[in-house]
Length: 115
Image 1 (tube, one colour):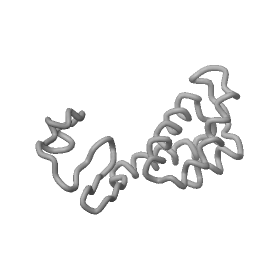
Image 2 (tube, helix red, strand yellow):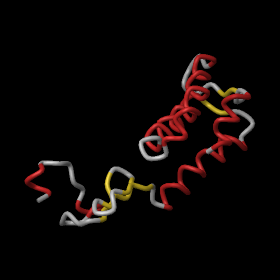
Image 3 (cartoon, helix red, strand yellow):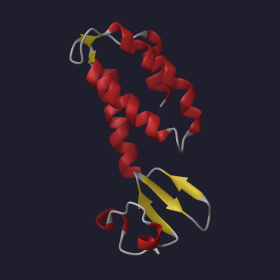
Image 4 (cartoon, rainbow, N blue to C red):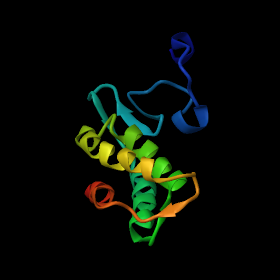
């Protein structure tokens, strides 16, 4: 069935057959139950990234953009977080290059703390 769909399928991550519950694009999918969730190992990885930024005295644009991209991906499942994204992306304008370090703005910090 997977081959017939011509869908990208990573056998090492998702198995060799299409099953009712599988892991793909960083999410767990339960087709029968119509559920999607983020696996715990991914959540811990993402939360660790956010905690590092919150505990650092200053953060680079590169790191903040990486966090933002991760959160955009998570918002496909965790829709409540989408309202927090503009506070993060709006702070990009204060950076002059990717690796310049800056303090997080108050609104960016609050948005990251929500996660």
